[in-house]
Image (tube, rainbow, N blue to C red; front, side, top):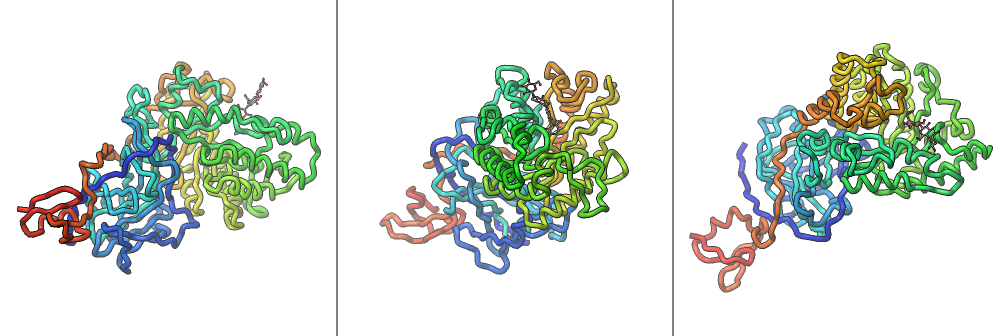
Length: 580
Ligand code: G3I
């Protein structure tokens, strides 16, 4: 295939006031995107109106790659680019050491003629200015490659960025497009040694549950949190009894402390939880409210809580632990709901559907999960796998009824002996087929009392095995551990059973180090070349050419073609140039 390497020189538009960026998912091409067409542009910024060049969201049958739905880009006989919106607030000039970061995953479908090798281009703005990254992309066929690039200035004038390659007649899949800020000014002891650094590179989350009193950045505990994790969840701070202690009287102070800390350290926050049979304020129980009153109470609670943190909390556990233990997936609708729940007792099953609808109305951008325990193992007779199938059937019913559910949270309060990583992977695969995310939300893994050294080695292997799943599956973006140090867990005897990733003095355990190794293995050593763009140094990619009399002699000319002009003096981009 003939390749023309089009050299692009470009500039990144310049400064606006710095905004504290948050990691924002631009596109992962959910099931509702299927069939969506994206416009394709050529280097001059014109729409490529060709039946050869196209960009369409399709279901990637090659599900082994865990891609699910992808954007299928076909480029005809002109190098083409796909344009996306820059998320709100993601513009401005970063301080030194901080960068706007674009991460995306690329895959070349089977049957392609050769390894895809081209220069990645990134443009901010719907002008023709394109950024040539410093390295070539080598995305061989059927290998999922995650790339990330950073620039320090992004103009808020134009709300677009483009992804494309300077290659003609090529085909590839795009997925998991994230845009966020990365700040290497943290006083990391050594970023390369932290799971967070590598997770950031590949757009994955390693999260931890916290309480406000742990968020002191001058303590070892506080530093351990922001250095090693990129997602927080309130252990109790955002539950019903903490946020609405009395009817329609809201207190967000605990949750605000967590959100503020997360914003300071560029971390994501997941909300836990809106409707749960436990830790629902006593007044709800005592009120002996009718079904309608209970639904009004729940609706008001959801709109006030989700609305308060709209745009700051990226995902919610909308309902928690609604399934009864000991499921019989072959009976009735394939699942049985927990009956000892004030919400179920007073409202029936519909409180689940309504809670998701209200959460979605309160924040349409939030990713909405149903969360439960003992729903990780798919089969094999281990450890209550029947609940997994019950959850599958409930989640399927919700989706089929058009309820805005986006994923399932596996709490995974497991144990070293019980956890079967291969069965967890099977569950992730099954929910991927449903078009649902499947994440780990409350992971802890106690050994026996006291836990032996060999158990702790097995624990490290299993923690790493779960991290491996998170790295490999598009629909499994996060794993959250339920606590930081072994002596501070909700579990009894935790100092003896050692369920978590850090020692009581916050030294990293083998389990943490194996998670770091796993994330690092997958983090593409992206040529993270921050561009300190300086406007007058660079020229736009396509220019008009004038002679010294100020008459236009060529328009919309590629920089590379300039040298083909007849010898002489010209004015290009406001500069005098001499063609020999
Ligand atoms: O806030 C009160 C405090 O005022 C009082 O002095 C103290 C002594 O009674 O209790 C405090 O409340 C405690 C609360 O945690 C906040 O610390 C509750 O007693 C205690 O029961 C509660 O435990 C939490 C538990 O959920 C409640 O079910 C744990 O910290 C928390 O880790 C645990 O987390 C749950 C998830 O939300 C859902 N999945 C299961 C997981 C483990 O149970």
